[in-house]
Every structure is written in C-alpha cells, then in structure tokens.
Amino acid sequence: MRMRRHHLQEEDTGIDLTPMLDVVFIMLIFFIVTSSFIKESGVEVQRPQADTASAQDKGNILVAVTAEGQVWIDKKAVDVRSVRAHIERLRVDQPDGAVVVQADQDARTGLVVQVMDQARQAGVHDVALAATAGAQ
Image 1: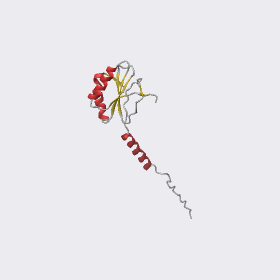
Image 2: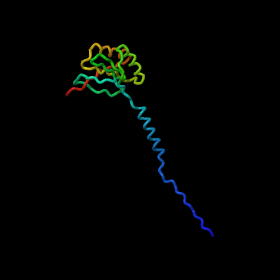
Image 3: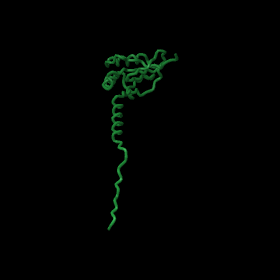
Image 4: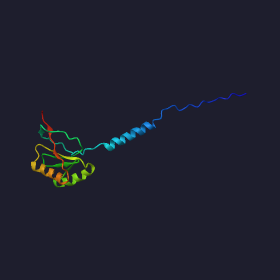
C-alpha cells in the first residue's frame, strides 16, 4: 500500500489593507478640496511697519507693488491697467477672498492707490494694505 502525502495548503494570513487605503485616499481628497490656496504675488517687498497690523484669516489675492513701480500678481509682472482683469479672473476661484496689496515702503503712493482702485472696480470691497506688525 502506498502512502499518500497530504499537502497542507498554507492559508493566507496577511492583513487586507485595501479598506485602510480607501480611507486614506478619501481623506486626501477631502483635504485637497477643502483647502484654500493663496495665490502668491511673486515678488518680495519691504513692507512698512504698523503697530495696529493684524493677520487676515481667509484666502486672499495678493498684489505686490515694488519700489521700482512694478505690479506683480500670481508670480507675473502686470501692467497697472490690467490689474482689474487679473483680479476678476482670480475671484472666480476665491469669490469671498479679499485683495491684499503688498506695497513696498518705497513704492509710489499714486501707484498703490491706482492698484487699490482697480481692485475696487473688479468688485472687491475688502481691499487691505499689507504691513509688518511693529513692536508692541
């Protein structure tokens, strides 16, 4: 009589990670959808100091005015006459966002006022001027 060998099949005892990966993927999508992205102006300016400066919490559209008279929006130098069109385009993504003008402390006041006026003409009522908080 011949002996038969019984081969025991190894059971798969690994942990199924598919549900965990699904949860992580859903959380990633949630954080991407709910986060607000700030459009940077694209240039660094030397902001003036103000003792009453306060941080703004909501998403903002940043417009920079340099000491040399350049206007920067979304990492591009733009003409002051096209500021309104650029802000209107950016407002589609952030309809409740404010416009923050980051004017260099040596920028011409007339140019800063023009930029703020263009933002108001684009339908933004919350236009702020950026400053560095002074010593309190």
